[in-house]
Image 1 (cartoon, rainbow, N blue to C red):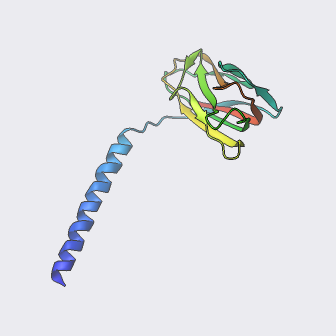
Image 2: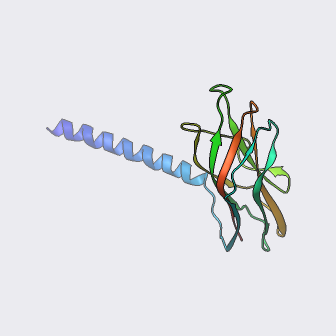
Image 3: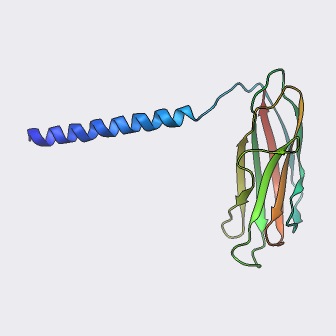
Length: 160
C-alpha cells in the first residue's frame, strides 16, 4: 500500500506542477486595462449582401473618443446571421473589424453556421490606439457570392 501512495503522490505532484506552469504561461499572454465607458450601435433591419469583396455592414459603425492615454479597446459584435450555402458546403460568410481603416485582431474571421443561420458573436482586442477620436467598422463578404444576411445586430466598444 505504501508504494501505491508514493506513486499517487508523485502523479499528483507532477500534475500540479504542469498545471501551474501552464497557468503561468497562459496568464502571461493575457492583457488587462481600465474600461471607463462604452459606445455602441444596434440595428434590427434584415439586410443581405452577395459581395465577394468587403463592404461595410449596414449600421455597424461606431465613432468613439479614446480618452487621454494610448491603449487597446475591446470591440464586441453580435448578430443574427444567415448564409445561403446553395453554392456548396465550402461557402463562407466572412467578417472583419477595421478601426480608422486598419484591420484589427486576427483579420478575416469565417462565420461558422449550424443549419445556415444562427446568432454569432465576435470579440476583438485592438492594437493600442492613440488618444482621440476613432471609427470602428464591421465589414462582411462572402467567398462564393452567395447571399450573406444579417438581422438584429450590435457593435459595442469598451474603452477608456
